[in-house]
Length: 322
Image (cartoon, rainbow, N blue to C red; front, side, top):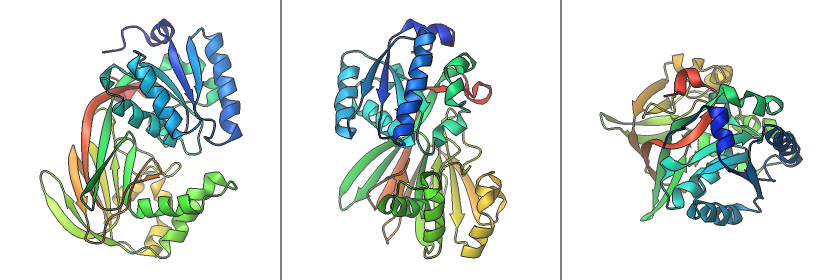
């Protein structure tokens, strides 16, 4: 199902289900939501508002809405909220290619929205005419541990080894103070003790086993609150862009942290880039993984791509529009 009308006409032609996570960045989310709701009303875009209490309530709500035929969703929150919603939609038992999702970024990092060139919220609704819906690729990670397989979808970047260890530390020591700097502070702390892990990386064309610092499997470009870790990723090309950083000294990482924000880290000799629609990762030590700040069960991983799996809104029409 494609977007049948010019974007503003399409937005006004259907009723949207507006899903609000009141816990995304605390009171900031609520203030931002009030701004956007006022803009939507002024723009004559019809919607029903739902405030989710927790993940379980969100799952029950979205599953019900899907089963009664709703296919158009606005999601207010951050990367974690958006990822939870995507996973619920894929588990709802309806054809996801019929679903349209318009994220309204109001979290701490909003990294998915950086790739898609989202404007500030005070300009958001006024600039909707500059964007469009695209058929967005989705990733599926299957975590395999002790004979049990856990499935998790993602729409941005899945991180392994060092990336996931930083997320683990951030989750364990999360504080309400200096939230925007939490990831970077924990990155620096973990860096002092982290050791490269021997990982077997299997792609359809090749396989390798080597000491690895970190692995990013990207559909989009940014993670870690603005780090451009996978700068060439395109969420509509049917391929993951996989960035592997081999064993690297702590001093060299510190020296080159700024390059992670510009994408220039790809020029380092320890960095290798691959494109594929599937891969597996395994380690005798057990590997840590994460998607959108959510830790995955430690173990081995099978990662596959679902091409053009759901409609998502982008302001980056030049590169991603069909």
